[in-house]
Length: 411
Image (cartoon, rainbow, N blue to C red):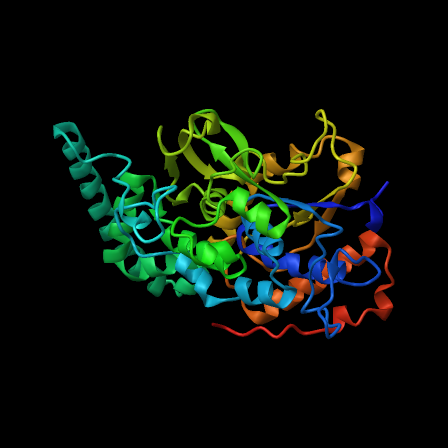
């Protein structure tokens, strides 16, 4: 049987890149007094609603779900989360090509400049590998120039590609640098912009975070917000998913965990944790990428003796169905979706687990589009709100929320 509102004390958010904007519709319905998982603002408006921590004390998330989970647990309102997911600031996730990665556990001020290339540049063999990589990158630059010319000849706009790749195609020189970054650090984007963004967002709502030079840890986060936040990362050496939380990794920085959980392989550089970065009992040494690869819907974060908690509601992005492939961006998005599907459906093994999962339609939202147009977001929000109302058995004909246009502004 589906959960009643009074049974829900934990939330689990699935990963899905830019599709995470659909969560706004579900959260809006959860702010309805008839559900009450979020509490309205003092003026009674839905858009000012925040998480009711007396009812929901534990939240988990993977990839895009980690972003939503963190913002919600921090105390951001529905309108504030809307501004985050529609902000042009998210485009800074796709930072310029550069040869470093954020170092985990170090000061925010210097963390971006401390990690050497994963492929290494010391020694004769390393230098040879780097020269080979430079040759390949230059060849790709030439290919990018040809692709740009071909696209113009056959009238295919560069805008049909994901935003993350448009600049690379439009500028072969930048494309060359991204490919070199991919070959030397196993990812195009450093993730420094994303880490800095989440550090700042968490600090704004966390008193200790405003003065902490190393960012807010999970232990500090729990002590401040009284929410057990659990985020998922994948360790490549073992091919297993792990939880980052106040219980598992109390001294780990929350922003680092979000950065790990959203690190789509090859798009973002993996996060490497070396021996000595953290106490030995953390057991975190390894190469970390997107948690959604193995566990894209962390509904089992709060299991008791391997039995799903009867109080967790999993929120899933995108119901099964036919999705047309009309552009290269659609192709890449569905490719990533297919790769993450095993990490999602593998978590739903019984009818009870299915009943504890709310499935949200995502409209025209795309995995790679982190800052979608207003009309696309509004469409997805309404569809996901409708699905959430259906889950809780609410009367949709009397809902003012479904007829509401969100005030989306670009920053």
